[in-house]
Length: 273
Image (cartoon, rainbow, N blue to C red):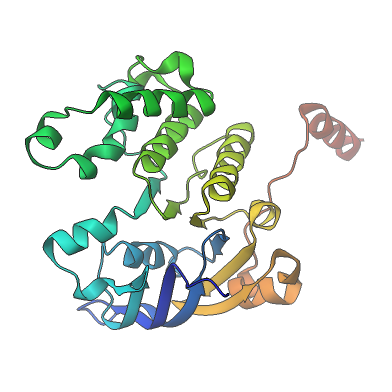
C-alpha cells in the first residue's frame, strides 16, 4: 500500500505585494523517510519553499498540504497542532545562549505543555530524562548544563537538532544548516540528520549550496531556479545538464574538496616551479 505524502504542493506559489514571484507553480509530494536536498542559486526560492510548509509565510497560489491538511486554511489551535509536526533547524541556530544546552533542547516540548506550565517551563521529569538521553546520543552528554553560548558552531547545531527532535515532529526542515560550519562539523550534522530521518521515519528537507553534500546524503534532490521547479530526481540523475538547468550559465557553486594542507602546499610549489 502506497504511503500518503507528508507534504504536498499543488500548483503552489508565493507572490509578494510588490509583484515579486518567489515561487511559481510548484507541484510535488514528499513521503515519510525521504531525505530531500533543495538546491539552487541564491534567490531561487529555497527558503520560501521551506517556510510555506510550516506557514511562516502563506501561499498566495495553489495549496500546501501537511499530513493531508491545507496549511492556509488552519487557524488558532488547529494551526498550532499542525506546526508541532514540523521541526525547524536554522543556519544561525536560534538558541537562547544564556540558557543551558539541556534547557534549549527542552524548548522543543513547549508546544506540548500549554498553559501555565509552558509559560514557566515546568517540564515533566520524563521530558528531562529524554532530552538528556538525546543529548548523549548526539555526543553532547557532558554539555547538558553548559550555557549554549559557550559551544562551537557544530555543537550549537546539534543542540538545534535535539530541540527539533524533542518536538516529536513528522517533518524536519533545515534551512542551510551547514552553511556556517567547517567540513568536519558539517559532516557530523549531515550524518545526524540522515540518521535521525531513517531512525524515526521522518521527511527531511535540507536547503544546501554544496552539490557534493546533496549527492552524498539525499534520497532525492529538488532544484529550483527563479522560483520554478526545474529538477526533481535522484542524486545519480543530477548530471551536468541538470546542473546547468538549475544554475544556468553562471555555473554551480564550487564543490567542497577534501584537500589536505599538504596537498595545497604541493600544488602551490608545482605552480611556482
